[in-house]
Amino acid sequence: MPNDTGLTPAAPAPLSALPPDTVRPRLGPHLRLHFDRSRGKHVLLAPESVIVLNATGADVVGLCDGSRTVAAIVDELRARYQRPVDDEVRDFLVRMAARRHVILEETM
Amino acid sequence: MDRPFGLLAELTYRCPLACAYCSNPLELAAYDDELSTADWQRVFTEAAEMGVLQCHLSGGEPLLRRDLVDLVRTAAELGMYTNLVTSAIGFSRPRAEALRAAGLDHVQVSVQADEPATSDRIAGIPSFERKLKAAAVVKDLGWPLTVNVVLHRQNIDRIAEIVALVEELDADRVELANTQYYGWALRNRAALLPSRDQLARAEEVVRDARARLGGRMEIVHVLPDYYSEYPKPCMGGWASRQLTVAPNGDALPCPAAQTLPLPRASVREDSLATIWDESPMFTAFRGTGWMQDPCRTCDRRELDFGGCRCQAFQLTGDATRTDPVCHLSPDHGLVTEAVEKANAGSRPVDELLVARPHRG
Image (cartoon, rainbow over all chains, first blue to last red; front, side, top):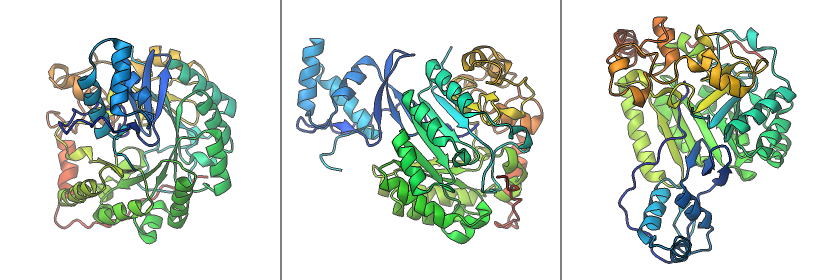
């Protein structure tokens, strides 16, 4: 009955510029990365919403600690997966940033 | 079967406010026998085991529960994201600090208007100044702040000023949600339903505010479903994503579902998982098998799930009918009639509201 503002699927990614290598992504304010044992998936918990992440998404978000650069995240995941991940990671970051789940600006 | 993501814990229906748009049940005496602290702690534990990730502590006024800090601590220890939905009455600094220490994640404060006279008139008691103070405490203690404003005919023309106030309070989110016509609010529908012109002006203000504040403040704007072509996808599907537990332990797929002619399900009698999986209250409208035409054969049946069961029942007396909000519903006239009345040229914007009697 009430307005269900949470749990909406991710909006399509706006085709804005991909983040440059030097940006240091961090989690949006007041978000929490949590492993949901009952579903076996990582989720981002936010006021009024739950974002269920796939395995790659969870890996990327786990590296958005405000100290690693985009280039470092890409390098780390390329090594981990043994395949090119550049576009995938950058697209994901842009989509997450559009909803303020990840912050790409250098300062608040 | 889907598992719920969110639990709305309606800890009490007692409330110091008397808002005419209250959507809680009309008859509150049945909810006086509230669950104990231990009952709620068991409910939270069962919810977390089922996969509930968010625990919304609401009411009524949840701060009237003296065990609120303990309940927050339990929910937080279970790993749930905890959200307090409050009128701010009783949100003193010491209480706030105790809630912070217990692990509360997020606070939503209701405001009835942008200035004290209207806000206090709608709330039924002097409360505006206390709300502002509480909002400041929320920010000061480092919480994310959501300000909730229920919009209606009598305050929607002040939406620009409301947004300015919310900006001044440095809120992270604002929910500008038009009244939903359940419980007490349905009684006041004629005095609450805005006109088309009012809604159009409000939408313009919201558009400008989003452009100006985008990235700084999230603005959720919920339009009255009476004006939409298709119904809202209520609760994201019946008993699919969320559940509510009422103060007396009744478990419900949505907070209005106690009005439906279904056997009660109570956490005093069964576990939450059993209720979710097996009780008629939860299985009755799950999926699409219960639907009548036009929903049954509609391409949108998996998009809006036939709309709101409670609204269908409330307006037509049959919970399996299409939500009359839908323009395809054979009962749509019930909604257009109310909308036409709201748009009659002679209609004032300040008709008398019937305030909810004070309780607690």
